[in-house]
Image 1 (cartoon, rainbow, N blue to C red):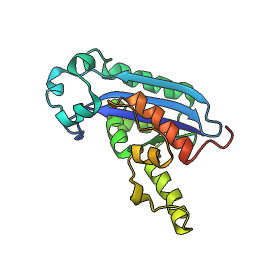
Image 2: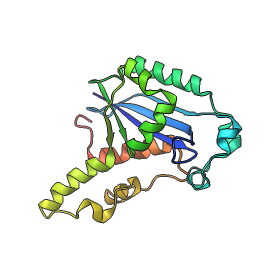
Image 3: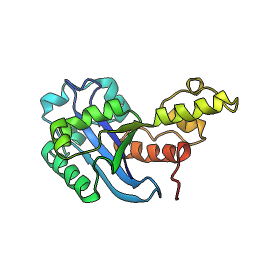
Image 4: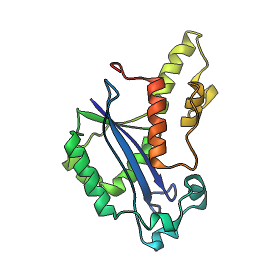
Length: 195
């Protein structure tokens, strides 16, 4: 089974008006933790889309128009991702997506590879989230009086990292930094059974 550890950055939180500006992922064997492939790209948009950016989102990512305008076209990024997934065998029953916030990442991923194309390509429809993994394990420990309830420490990736004595994600947030941090947290929470 493959895990597509994915993170994305956008110029706001409303996918009806905001755009994904960066995507990154690493495809990892979930038994061994070995890296199969990785991908990262900025995505350019017309300035009219950039003008609709949410300033608070840009404060988190640190992106500027000059930086984003040098990104690849949406069409090119879409084809590169599709080719990568085909080459690595990313498909249903063979892979899952793993994110910190799949409701965000899946929605914005759909701007790159639309849902109909995802269906035609038989891409995985399971988008798993780190917070739920941490929640389930923490609840078991809390029920056995071996640790706090998960909400007591928080469910953000940085809070989960702190719980496992890992450093926070680097700032400003960038997609590949998010992927690397997600992988470190996943190793601490779940691990790779044959690593």
